[in-house]
Amino acid sequence: MMSEKEKMMAGSWYDANYNEELIALRQRAQSLCIELSAVPPTNQEGRQELLQKLFGRVNDHLDLVPPFSCDYGTNIHLGSYVFINTNCYLMDCADITIGDHTFIGPFCGIYTASHPLQYKYRNMGLEKASPVKIGANCWIGANVSILPGVTIGNGCVIAAGAVVTHDLEDNVLAAGVPAKVIRVIDQDAPLEE
Image 1 (cartoon, rainbow, N blue to C red):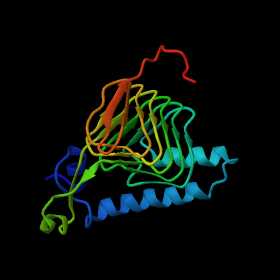
Image 2 (cartoon, one colour):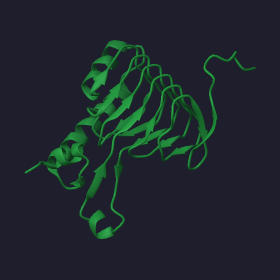
Image 3 (cartoon, rainbow, N blue to C red):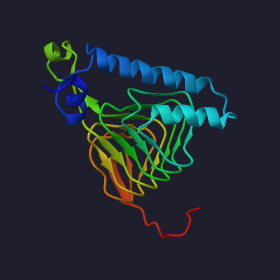
């Protein structure tokens, strides 16, 4: 029989609210996030130590501006030169993968969990998680929400306030609620004025 954590990682319905193992893992992550907020930015060694404890994978040159919060941390996989601005929340009940050189603006949320429509199942604490993947060289504007199961291609720009509900191909500018492709980005074009 699968544990609730195994069900969570397999994308099956699992008990998120009442399972002691998952509660303990979330409390660990919350404590590390609080500790991270208390470490001054001048103490890079202390910050890196906490980030290594919190995340599943941290590569070179992660710049994360607290406060920051996540559910587990260990399901977050970050490329090199990732920047995460202040007040971001990563609901990592499933894997969240963020590619190299990706910038995430302030007050963004990346969500992997969804709940049943019927309240009797929600009240039982059931939820299901689907992974989110963000490619390399992306810019996610302020206050963007990325919903469960979404894949964002390389080189994308997501305008501030967008809600991304579906996959996006490489090199597109998307905006709106729900986010829609505005145009394709020509990565070789001259710098716009």
